[in-house]
Each structure stands twice: as C-alpha cells, then as structure tokens.
Length: 210
Image 1 (cartoon, helix red, strand yellow):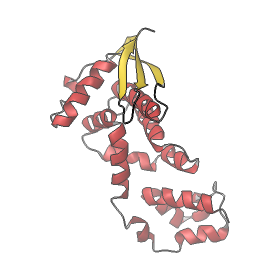
Image 2: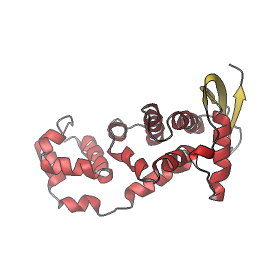
Image 3: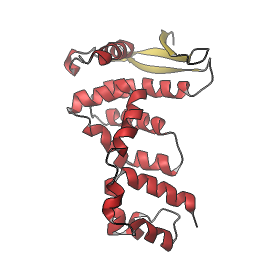
Image 4: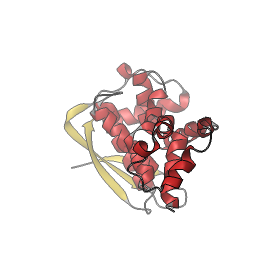
C-alpha cells in the first residue's frame, strides 16, 4: 500500500473540486501518474462525491494563512482582478498539486505561482511579479537562521510600491492600482532581506548597492 501517495492525493482533492470531479469521472486517467493501487483508487471514490466538499471553508483558511505572509502580492491581485476569487485559482493549478505531491513548502509555491501570473501578463503584471518576488524572499528568509538574508534584483520603484501598500493595508483604505507607484524595468534596484537577531524578530528590508 502506498499510504503516503494516497494521503497526498486526498489532500489535493480536499482543496480542488476540479480534481475531485476528474477522479470520479475517470480515476484511472486522473490518477495515472500516481503510485496508487487499484484498491486505493477505489477508496478515493467510495464516498459520496459531495463528501469532499463538506468543509467549504478549508481553502479559505489555507488562503488566509498564505495571505498573511504575502499580503501585498495578494492585495495587488485583488485590486487588479476585482475580487479574491482569482487567488483561489492557485488550488487548481499544477503549482499547488506539485507542491503537495513533492512535500514542498506551500508559501514558496504560492509566491512562485504569483510571480508566474505576473510574468504571463495577469493581475498587475510587473508589479505583481516584483512584489511576489520580494515577499517570496521574505518567506524564505523568515524560515532561515537569524542573520540569514537574501538580495533580490527588482524593477526600480519596488520598495516604494511595497511600502505604500504595506502602510495602506492596515487602514483598509487601499488606493487603486492607477494611484500606486509605477515600476521601471530599468534601472534595477537591489533589495536586501534579512532576519534580525532575537526571539520573534522581524525582517528587515532595505536597498543595497549591486
């Protein structure tokens, strides 16, 4: 029995109704790449299909945890798309499924996915890619040792945009995208993210020379 593979598929199905529909429609095709036995595939479709959706707030809770680490990136998506529904697409994307299957860190996968959405011309474009890159670096440094840090090369104006939205979010008065600082692809700016020393220490983000 491949219990771990079965568990990971179950986690994915709890978060993605499109996968649930595909598995119930044709489990062999939908799970062709999974190391599951015929009995294990049968186990996944034994319950009433609606059972996979009995906790509709599950995805919202996970998204809220991700939002806490990438608040500015999520705000840009919501401003550009007009709702938070765009962010929920992550849970049906290959990036989410690969992360769960390979036991990755979900917030890293989410940051990378947001960067890719920006590069593909969605939801704020260059602004989304730049800020998601910065917040993704923050997430990585946050999980490192005190004193660890990363330097990222970003479009000029990223730190101004990041600071403006970071200050506006707690107030609930977030300006529209057209009123936020614009980014310039050249020249680049280099931002250093470091984890300060001490229990519960915050991160430090500041500009450095290339």
